[in-house]
Length: 478
Image (cartoon, rainbow, N blue to C red; front, side):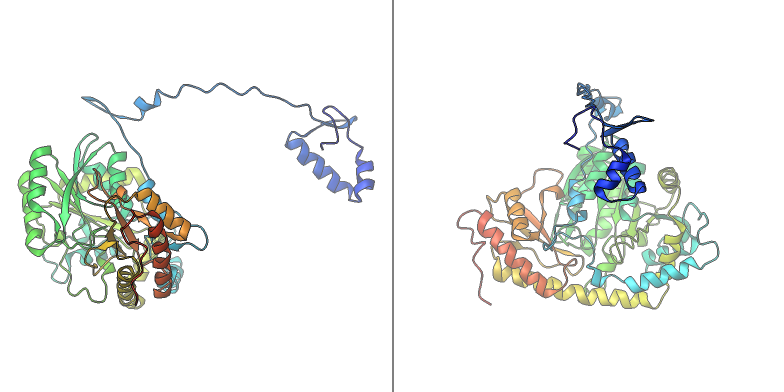
């Protein structure tokens, strides 16, 4: 079109047919498309013309500064900033460029997902009568009862019943509902330090103030939890007692009752995020029961999900609670979601009731252990400067500390340039982190060969980014 000046008449349709040897229909469609794009204008009886440049003036930018106040939570003391920061979550959701090894993945590798069992369950669910009708707002009764049995454990006397369970659209949705129900904007919420960034994002988006309570190798420290309650007046603690994310710690047996007792005496709730119970490794041994399994007073609000152990797209989870809080959870859940789609619930019910389910759990447990051990061994061999805590016996990842003086952004950037995606540790802390950490996942890898190559690439990144003399780039001979 550049050969025609603005306002100049184009050749007739007959001339265009002859010149380009196409059909009249093709010419007509081409002119219509150009007219729709504003390149030409057509005048009935006169032909088509090159359009005059419209030259709209660039509008002056508006003043959007008023939104800073409008987007804050209004309290009696004034507006509270609401920081909606999804960066910590997007690290595990973003798909890395082709060829990059995923040490930042938050889900099972496709080879570990029960794709055939899921497909079969979905097909069976689709044939159930009423599979596409509206489900009960609390969830299918059979699925609620299954989750209740899983939470209560073998004995089940002190655990929740199906009537105490709400079906949610995965664990993140359950977290959002729980925090909105339990703490108003501006309120403090006690969290483990470090902790899951997605939970911090939920709290901050609700205008709440996350307050850190440190963890050690045995999980949350009860004396610091009690001190934080006294200092802040908080009425909510969010914790992961089993294979904590990111440290992998398991709350010690002697601390479990203590944490619930301290919360009960303070009139506070404990939100128990039991995300990793199905992710125990082959050598995990007997797992401690959930805190909610023996909680007659309704201190614990329990949540879990089927997503991590199956597929990112099977977003089916559960909230369990007792007492008046259950009604508030139910109300917020209904307002936010109405209900979880029935076909997903039916498929989940088919899956967990099939013979393929226990086989899948055993297969994942058997597959995660060698990946974990291989990653730990390769880090010791190739990148000894990254100090490891004890390897957890459940979950997806290792939590490692970089040498003092490391620039975290420089290290994660160098790793990506070297072809391996890692998760920075900073988003796991709601206050100033005590050191630079990385979370290195092994569940999203194809196997031990890919882990070896990923660590080799990480060694290259460490040679570039770790402080001089830290030894990050010196491999240890096998």
